[in-house]
Amino acid sequence: MAQYSCIDGTPDDYYLVHVGSRAHGGAGLVFTEMVCVAADARISPGCAGLYRDGASQRVEADRRLRA
Image (cartoon, rainbow, N blue to C red; front, top):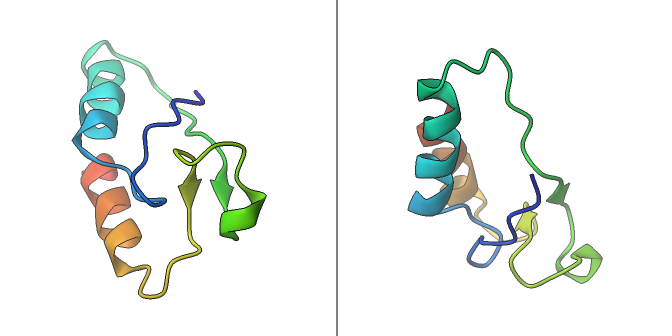
């Protein structure tokens, strides 16, 4: 599912709509893309990541996706 649409490692509303449409379509399991632990490990600037100080934004974004 490599969408490469994160902003500074954090998924935005695009991901909420993308994953939500899969759930609405009846998917029983959805895999997300890789999550980088360092900014220099990214394939592109849009990769998801946990490399920012204060990764609480990332955690909150993931909670929105799972709700």
